[in-house]
Amino acid sequence: MPVPDDSPTSSFLLLVAFTAAVVAVARYNRRYRGLRLPPGPPGWPVVGNLFQVAFAEKPFIHHIRDLLQAHGPILTLRMGERTIIVIGSAEVAHEALIEKGREFASRPRENTTRNIFSSNKFTVNSAVYGAEWRALRRNMVSGMLSTSRLREFSRARMRAMDRFVARMRAEASASGDGSAVWVLRNARFAVFCILLDITFGLLDLDEAHIVRVDAVMKRVLLATAVRMDDY
Image (tube, rainbow, N blue to C red; front, side, top):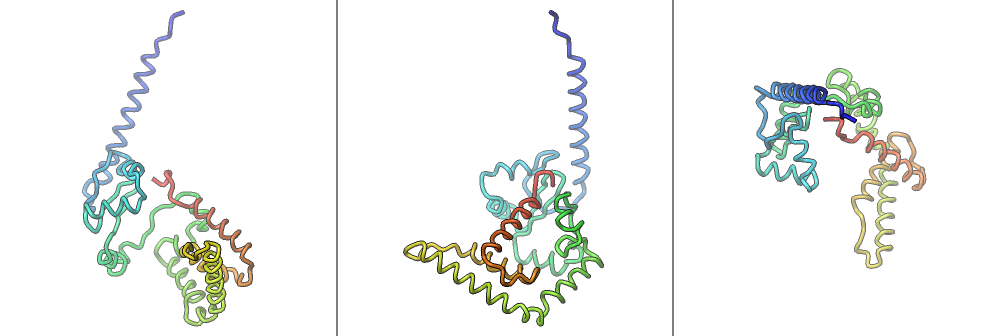
């Protein structure tokens, strides 16, 4: 039985793939041509430095530390369609965020999941810089961070610190010689207790329920974390 000749179809698919690759590379080059960006590691067409970061075989923060040592206190990473400017010194951070904060106050586009959990970017940490963001910040300062409000939350802080000390003592006792305690986890739990009371007024919630709420929040954070489709 003769095998049908698929060479025209294969040639067509190859041509389409080649054309798509050329268009993608052209768009990538046009996007970055003429931009005065800080130095950074050379990347591949289209994907930029995405694979270099993914296959670095070390934690992201350690990889960035090595890149900062090689390229200086500020560097550029091209992660697919996104360009990331990494700042690695206090002086440059002060210049960018304080002295020139207005120029760098905009936010990148978000994926659908984060838009849902931020009420379509209607939170102080997600809203686009402008009148709406200033109103949200004003509400946060007056409702949570003013001197009078901080005094009102003193009981919540004291209760959280009591829980923090109790958890540390329990872990120290469980370790036998008292040498193994997980300070960061317990400190984070104490801060979460304070935020839970400030946000929902749940000061007297028992620890088991707080742990369950914390687990839900961790799942939300994982759902809104950086993903491949961001790039």
